[in-house]
Structures are given as C-alpha cells and as structure tokens.
Length: 118
Image 1 (cartoon, rainbow, N blue to C red):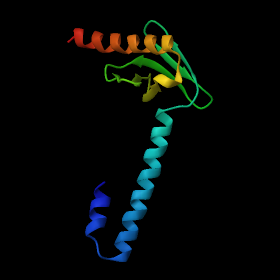
Image 2: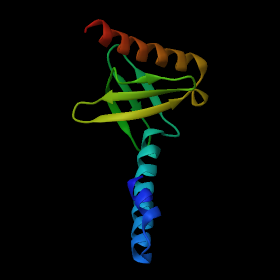
Image 3: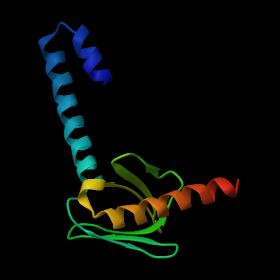
Image 4: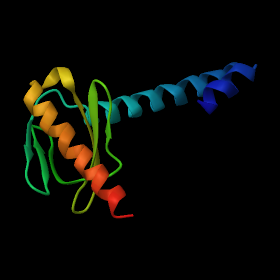
C-alpha cells in the first residue's frame, strides 16, 4: 500500500516501474497466502480437543485457537499446530448445514473457554 502511495507522487519513469513491480510481487505473494488459507476441497475431522484438516496439498492438525472468528457466512480458524500455526477459512456454502453448525460450536466453545479462563 505504501509503495502505491509513493508511486502517485513520483515523476521518474524508472521509479514508477519499480513501484509497479513491487506491487505486482506483493499481490502475487498475498494471492498465494489467501489461496492456501481457503482450500477448495478437503476433510475436516473434529475430535474432543483436536482439529484436523486433510486434502491433497495440506495436512493441518492442532487445536482451535481463541483467535478464531465466526462470521455470518464463514468461519476463520486459527489452528495452533505442534510446530507452526495456520489460518483456515471455511465457507458456509462449501459444507452441509450440520457440519457447519458443528464447526461453529467448536469454534465458539474454544473462544468462550479461553475467555472463561482469564
């Protein structure tokens, strides 16, 4: 964003090209990160204290963090793994209603459990 603002005030053609190139690289990196957070297909396994997601590309396992959020049409999961953390976005349109309700309950219990322990 800063490079875009700087690009507006530059008059040198080379400086403008550098700003456009920097924005292009940033856009590609952000696009890859969003694509990794929002997988198209996969299997979610909810156990008592563990969450697992598996598909052809990713195998994510860990606990649902209190940083997770429930929105109107999606659930944003922050999974605390054993050695790394992951964001996972699950859309309500991508799963059946019962599975989505179970996922929302699991996230809300993780968030409320963390608030109750403070």
